[in-house]
Image (cartoon, rainbow, N blue to C red):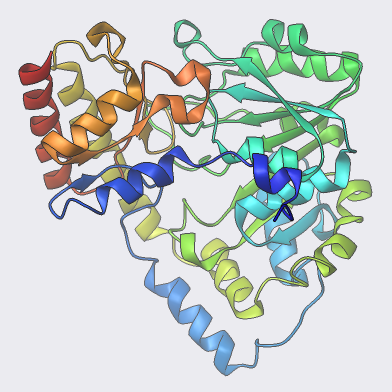
Length: 385
């Protein structure tokens, strides 16, 4: 039987899922793999969802989302443009659908979309689903994991349609500097490109770092689609709600696409998201303090292990330590670590060829687990290398 489409056959397998499945065989393994906050969704958000169900928010709503939620998001993004209204906002089923929807709305079969390497691996598959061709551009540790305009320009061809940026980055934890963003904006203007700016970690930022969005550059703002979600900042991963902010000429085409995919996001979840924006953010502030402490626990611990070096990430809850000095492939190291030390991380090669020699480690975990994990990694390295 040969009924599978080319996309289904070629869609890249998840290296994250591979490690997740391997970890299931080890009961005492410390899992530092899944990009999910280890906190509970704040109580006020959960209560808002319960109220919304009781108030009858259980029916269809406009495909683009509840007007009151779209208006609230537009107000949040007045930091980018005072002109944004609800017409500039589309509500989606998480950040994943936001990216896919943005691609479907703006690329044609055969168009090329530039993505960073390393990157969130689903970007590759999402570009393929839209019928476009992913083109990777290397990102170097020597540049603080900032993607550079010069490297982007080298990859541009007559078929290049768009660029996908991710800052703060998964898996790198890096924030693209203002200067790099301005230089990329010049490339966007020169070649008249669309930009998908994945900003889902923009509220998880450390050390006073600045998250400067390419949507803040007036000359290219109309060509930028900002992708965000409530999953990470508001601890709503399983709620599946995200959004797109962009020029109304693009956003206005999305409701008809949404109609054929999911119709609309559950209305009581949208009401919960509205509470996330308008209600208390005390829990979010507390979570941020925990992330900062846990980042330092992990990074300081890893840097004390001979053969491992790691920059402190400025954003997200991911560390991307280098194991190049150990002279072992990242997949080999990761598999040996879970089998012999009971710690699960993701090999950097799962995020692209430029990730070889690195690991992705999630510090959205308890202090106790992070301390134990560092001890186990140190013992494993000492015994093995």
